[in-house]
Image 1: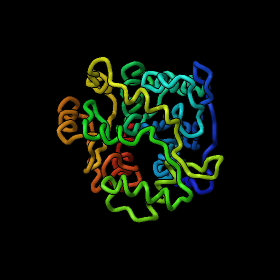
Image 2: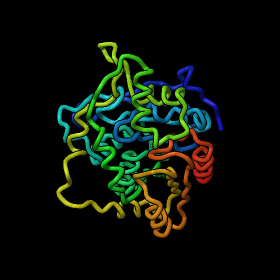
Image 3: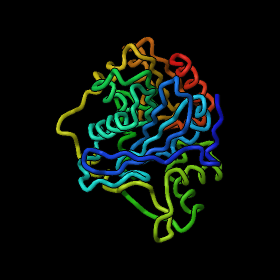
Image 4: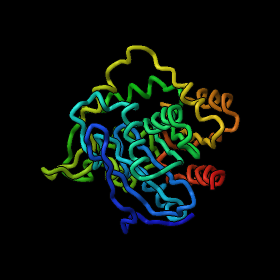
Length: 291
């Protein structure tokens, strides 16, 4: 595995434009051009910094592209909060592939990013060389959704990184029970940013909560999205303590797609950070099927 430390900013900041005129940001880590790039899609409230562990491990041997979805990180916020939905994210990412001239990708999606990957696989299966779903499946546990509903869009700011880290520890201690304060500080710096006021706040548009909190008009069956990935290399990671992806759902996924690799990452909840040795070994095995 090639090492590409993010400490020396080994990526290039690049952008593309959405159909509705937003400037969207991505990190582009250089890698071999004889392999499809790894394209990473973050979770609901997360951004490109989430995938620094994956880039540290695999960039160089693989080109790694990490997007900031609209309303997150360095991407523009949308004037219409109703565009904060998976179908729009798929449209945005397809435009990126077209602008960047990428025929095929290895999609790595955490949580919401995995739902976006599955939907994209249904609509554009020819774009995929493989998929990794990080702690997400076709059935999502209500307990986990309730937990996310409790915090998404709530805002809040902190005077120092230590205050921010302690706040995250209070709300996420059961997700990463082995974390020490240095881990919570690193976690905070991935999730938050120093604002114009000098205070530290979450790095996303609080309005992403509006469509998420609105109940869907009808139940959504995501199993057809999952089944659309049949025939390509697929890996699903599950955090051992996850309240989003149940063990029963993972077992059903394996029954529906016997060729899928399934790995449970011990000692973490939703979602694995991809710095865990078990996660990196599983990703390396997936990439070994593609290289």
